[in-house]
Image (cartoon, rainbow, N blue to C red; front, side, top):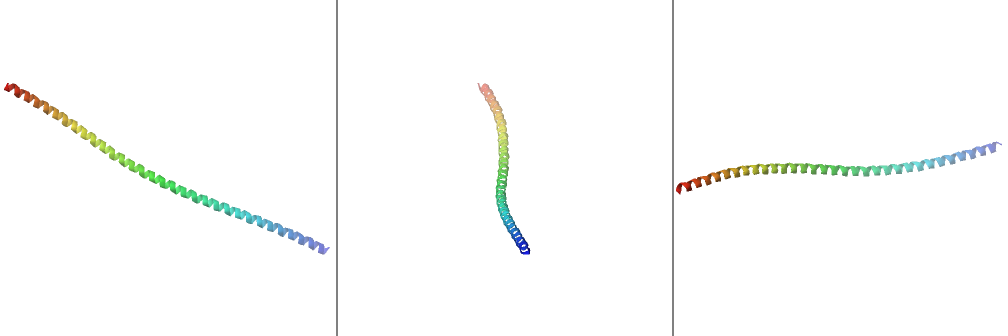
Length: 116
């Protein structure tokens, strides 16, 4: 009876060892899957960081283009203002010349009348 009890206990211990080995195998498999998932997540994070850096570089480039466009716009606005000022000055000079021409014509007409 004692031998039968010892055999039963040995069989029970062997079953427990086998069950524990199976549990360890499952835990190892789960750990490998978790490690694989972590590696995939890290790879995706690295890819996202690279995309973010690219987007930041694009944004900086766009800001630089906007700044350059604003500077060009200001330069062109100054040129337009200068041209408007020059046009006004030329119109004033033209009016002055017209008045001088009219005065010269009147003077010539008067001189011609005096000669006649």
